[in-house]
Amino acid sequence: MAKMRKSWREKLHDSKDLPRVVEINDKMSQRWGTGTCVIPAPIEVDQIMRSVPEGRLITINQIRESLARKHGATIGCPITTGIFSNIAARAAEEDAGDGKKEITPYWRTLKSKGELNEKYPGGTEAQAARLQAEGHTIEPGRGKKPPMVKGFEKALHKL
Image (tube, rainbow, N blue to C red; front, side):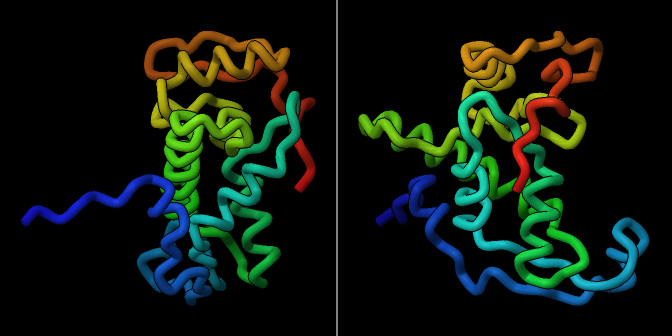
């Protein structure tokens, strides 16, 4: 019998043995320097994303910095933080599909330079629509550059 796939909500709540702080090894140090790296639990990323009020924004890098502070690490893992923000977004859409009103406002989480995230449900178009509904102005992407929130720095939420 085929194994059932986990729902996004189940993935969000499956922390395995995370969070975990690891030493930055030689291969990683070429990109991230020296010190320690926190690999967060998915729910920790979701909790930070949930803390952003309407009209405000955060970046993935702010989430990583917040996680590093919380766990006393040098950096927050960029790979898992990005993956877990996507899991949080998809779990939020599952919740919305089930009629829940209080969902994680994932659309308020931007990439590091204010760009929209094409991996979120509905792509950059859906994220842009939600952000515009909250009063943000979206600059269209050019070439391979994705759309971004104009003047996003002014709307950043302090974590």
